[in-house]
Amino acid sequence: AEQVSESSATRHVAPVEVRQADPPGAEDQCRAVGVLVIEDEKLMRRSLEQGLRKRGFAVWAAADGGEGVELYRRFAGQIDVVLSDLNMPVMDGLQTLGSLREINPLVRFCFMTADVRLSTLTGLLKLGALRVFTKPFPSVAEVAEELRELAARTPVAFSTVEDAREEGGHE
Image (cartoon, rainbow, N blue to C red; front, side, top):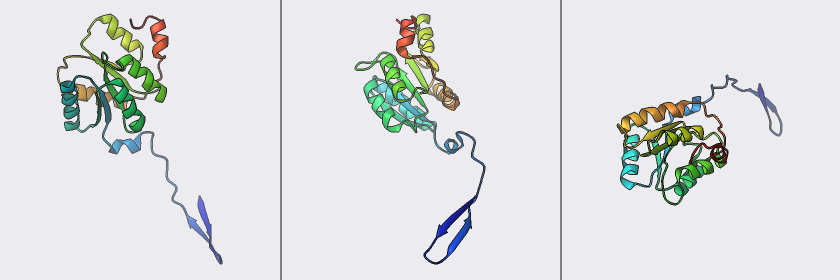
């Protein structure tokens, strides 16, 4: 490929470096994995935020789903995975997932909950959650390791939250 530039009197032809395109995601390998943590319990939110930062993550933290949606809207290009509590005031985890899917249908989303009923866990996975972490966590280190792996996965579109509710995916 050549680039042509014209000045008033002469014409220059300059070679342009042609290189193969980087594989998808190659430009992202140099930056930290971005995680949006949405948790209404202040102590848990701070613990996750500090623990993930300590392990090399870029972390955005929100106290409820509404804040989380606004942060995602502003920083979606830098957020690789979302970790959200299920039960929160203002906007719960299911509503948050629905709102984030409107912004990005391929959002990588994980829930955290103290509700360990099989029907709840199965329903959340049917909605497209990549993982449901049960509280209390064994350790932030284990959560961090799993989030790093999930962030590297190719995103997949799932049915909408409304479709899954109609199918009986979550009560």
